[in-house]
Length: 383
Image (cartoon, rainbow, N blue to C red; front, side, top):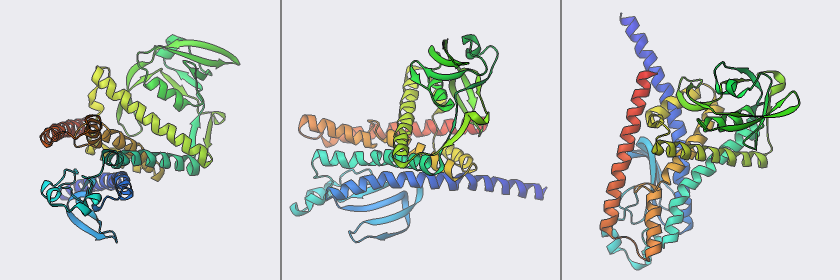
């Protein structure tokens, strides 16, 4: 009995380490570059940066650079922040006492006293750094590792499926959907996956002859290689695995970077479409995940190799950059919303109005975190 218990505990500990280490690796990369974006543009604008922290809470270790910035790693590794001269907290809320007593010659070093356009540039630099990181990672993968492509050729057609109803047959090569050229099976999957319930005009090469069929993808729950469930539109076909239909394509750096831009835009577009579907009632909100789900996926992806893990970092970087642009106070997008109002009015909102906004933003963020964590727990319990 004691031996079995020891084995179970060891397996549990190994599983936790297997999730936590890849999760922290991915999250640290994404958070570092997000905060680095804020930091670099702040320095460019002449703003004095007091703290650059990866994580929150007590400092584990750190150092001061020659400009007086404290670079540190903190105990709670679930984010990070940059604190500017004149800030009261990590959320860049101004310290009113310090601001009131600040000497005129020091104001040019304070974030608070920058004009609205400089403040907006510093804030938006974080999400933009996330997008640039994703483009570079995707580009590096496509340059040095390559992209595994499979021709959009039909191997089998499932009975009673959307493909069967449309008349697709084995050997058909999909060359376009709604007039958009299709080069790979993955391209076809992306379009079909986001088009559940929508009629698609599919052009296929059938023994050298172009044929157009209409198919309406069905909404199905699909499990990925790690057992995670996704709701996607499906036709009910499988790809051809014949050697002539499979190839690993490496690209030159310029083309690879452009492919990285396209890949980044796809993640943005798919995320916005999904969230829009949730609001409209077309999508289920249970696909929204939090730190637990990210940690689980990180561990699963890490088992597939470093390239898969760094690819996940790129996807997560896009997601965090996009999330931070939402117009919710406390997030970068909330700050940008206040700055837009300030630019239109010619003066900032009152301290009271901003305080109320930040409280509302905090409530929204906390509710989303609780909801996402609840989804994570349900997902773990049912997986």
